Length: 290
Image (tube, rainbow, N blue to C red; front, side):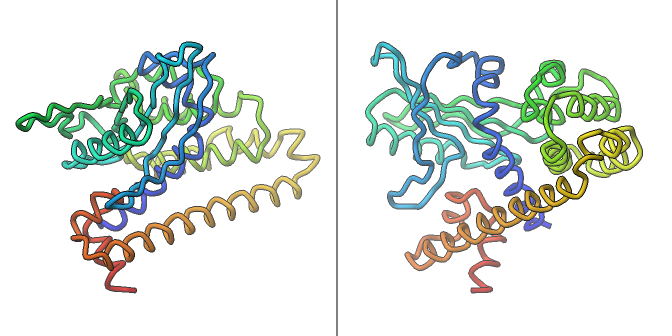
């Protein structure tokens, strides 16, 4: 069961990383209060190597006209609590500060249900460290439904429904995806991503039923673009789906290599799991099956 949860967590990470460039600016402005709409972003490689090999979810240097205002933005997305998250964020902070010597703003975005129990600080003798923790379910569903950016719209499945029935929320999200002017292949992709994200709220079966029964399927089959190039669109969709599955497989293989490499360095299983954001059971399984 733990391995299955980690498999889903890896898929959520994949979706968020794939969509991050489309969602980063409106998300930061609305949810975090950082306006970088007219700022340049110098993206930083997310692989950080020192004693352990770790990979950040998002790193970017936010550039201003006055260089003194520049800072590094670091985002991490968590679908479940990591009770050592404060140590992990401190590691990132120390490595980035040593390498770039400019201020760093760190945010952990908790995608799980309810309120995260992760510690956000370390106070130990002369050490006083903290990072920002944001619970995604604190955000109002209205912002996501009103957006015209599909990558933002699908994240509404994780927001606060404000007492509204989950099925009605799903209807609104699906209808909004249809209304946005994108081709059918991308519509299918966003619905597939929505279905995956919905598992974080135990709504996957509801979404599957909605996709099969509601007007969404009817609209796709009767769309003039679909009629004109049905076979071509199907081929594109299959190619996209295969590419998506290949990327997930590649992502998992890279993580397996990292596990084995760290294991060869005599790093403890718990430290390997923590640095790669995996469960200890999954780490043990990879080592056992090598």
